[in-house]
Image 1 (cartoon, rainbow, N blue to C red):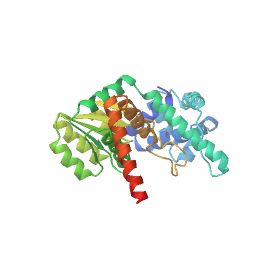
Image 2 (cartoon, rainbow, N blue to C red):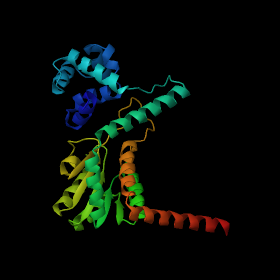
Image 3 (cartoon, one colour):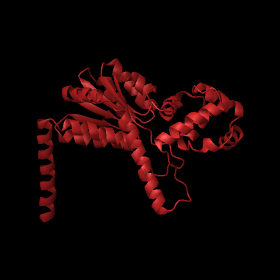
Image 4 (cartoon, one colour):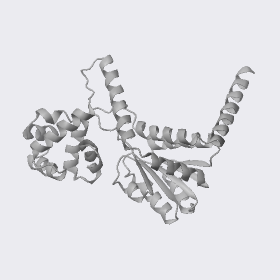
Length: 279
């Protein structure tokens, strides 16, 4: 685990002022290499003492030690930032590099044995529910459509009331795949708590291994958080999670039954589409 990855995992548990420091570092780890403690404190608007406490909390003996570890981590991860001064071509390359880094970090976190276990859970589940709110809700809908095309009984719950209703009647034969980048969405976490009381199996797709959602899940698939950019703009926050969904559904399609079903559903949809067009 790299220093930056460890810092990301610690983020939810940090005190508010120290969290500001961590987020700033994750967004622009190069800045600290040329800054002294006074400059960093002034930029983030925290005290020098807060920075010192933060350094010790993340297992650095001093601010200087923090700079050394960040320099090594930033060099290995090839972190780039997006600035308003960049021209269009440069920005295009930086967005590409950002996505490539997110994808690489997520791939490094994947455990193939763990993914195969999830495949078996999906195959054996009576019903598969995808839980997600906001952007994660759209990812849940996409994942559900993919499973439906394979003939798997799948449902997307993207609204908190529906999650609670489903969790109240769910059974041990059902599987929930809960999607949340932070793993701290209150209504989703409470719905999962209820589902666990009813013995449902839960898989979590989240960026934080120690988040409330991760603590409840039977299996946690870690993904890289895409929020660590100095100007997020319209960077896709679900990019890394969608990559994991792609891997899971591709593994499922290695099953001939699922592959044949998907082929039939796609053919049916295309025939309906073109028949309607030619009328």
